[in-house]
Image (tube, rainbow, N blue to C red; front, side, top):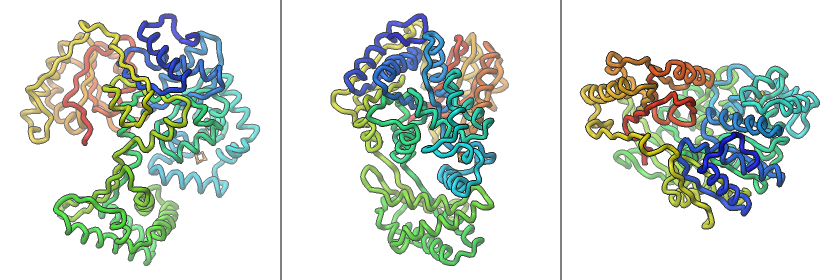
Length: 528
Ligand code: SF4
C-alpha cells in the first residue's frame, strides 16, 4: 500500500486495505462494518487511488454530510505531501450551495435549478458567462482549473471562493476540475439519483463503468435514498398555492386548485385517519390532465419567482411530477388531521425500496465499497441494497481496548412520548449532570429532538459545572467549524448539547482525545 498517508499503519488498516484492494482488483463489491477509530478514510482511499492512478479509473467518494468532505480532502493532502504526488481532487456540494450569486439560500432545490437555468438562458449570470459552457470552457476557466490543480487539493469552500474571485461559476469550475481529477468527493444523491448521476458524469467526463464508488457512513444511505425519492403535499400547502394563483388572477389555475382541494377533502371522508391511495385516484381528482396542470403551475411559479424566491405553485408542480412515476417500490398514502380546527389532508408517495436506486450503480460501477461503523449485520445491507452474491462482507473489531470502553445503560429513564413530563426531564437532567460533572474531560450529549434537549437543558443548566455548547439547527459550515474549535479549546470543561442526526452526531472528528464521553438520550431509531 504505497500511497498510505501516515507513518504508522494499524494492523486493522492493513486488513481493511487488503480487503478493498482485492475487491477492486476482482471488480467485486464490499460491505465493511468498520467501527469508528479504525481510520477508514485513509484505509479506503489508499487502495482505491492506487487502482485509479494505475488503471486510469476514477474514485467517487460519497458522503452524507458536508463536514465529512474535509477529512477526505485532508487525507489526500497528506498522501500528496508524504509521497510528493499530485492527485487531482474535485470536491462538490449542491449547486445552490456553491452558487456565486447572492441571496439564493431561500430557494428550494427545484426552484434554484429553475432560477439558475433562467439566468443562464438570459445570459444574466456573469459567473456562467465567464466560464463559457461545460462543453466549451473559456480559456479563463481552463487557466483557473490549472491553478487549482497545481495547488494543494482544495476543499469545496476554497474552490468556491477561488472561482468567485475569478468571476467563474464555482459549480461549473468544479465540474471542469473533476474532468481532470482522479478523485471526486460528493453527496450520495449525485451518484444514486439517476438524473444527477447523468449530470455529474457528463460534467466530469467520467464513466460509471470505469469508476470505483466508496460510500462512507453507508448506514445513512437507505433512509437518504428513501427520503430523496419521497414527497408530500397537503391541502394547506395547496391553499397557499391557491393564494398565489389568486394574486396572479389566473382563473384556470384557481379553478383547478379549488377542485383539487375539494376533491381531496371529499376523498378523506372515505377513511378514518390514514389510507392507501392509488396513483389514478389522485389523477382522477385532477380531471385526468395532470401534465397540463403541471405546466400551468410551472408558468404561475415563474411569475411568482420574479418577486419572491419560494413559490407554493412550484412545490405542487414538483410533487405532481413525482406522483406520476412508476409504482414499483413506492407506497402512496393519504391521511387527515385538524390543524387549528381546519381540516388538513396530506398526500404523499413514499419510497420503500432503496435497492431500486442502488442496483444500477452497483451493477455498472467497477466496484462499490460501502463502509460504516454501523453496518451490522452486513447481510442485511447486502439484501437492502441488492448487492450481488459474491460481495465481500467483513466486520472489524473496535480498535479501542474493551477495558477503555465503559458502556452504561440507564433503564430508569425514557423518552417515550407517553412518559414525557417535567418529572421525567428532571430525572434525565440529573443523570446528565452527574455523569458530565464526574467525567474528567469534555462530554457530548445527544437528544432525540431539539425540543426535548431544550426541556432537559433548562433543568440541567444550574446543576452543571461545565460550559454548555448548544447546537442550533441550520448552522452554517463556518459556524459549525468555529463551534467545534471552541468546544475543543474549552477542554476539559465543555458539554455539547446536540441532537441525534443533527450537525454534530456523526462525521465530525474531535481529535486529540478532546471528547471523553458521549451520552445518548433515547435511542435514535428511525420511524418504521
Ligand atoms: S450558473 Fe453558476 S453562478 Fe450562475 S446561477 Fe447557476 S450556479 Fe449560480
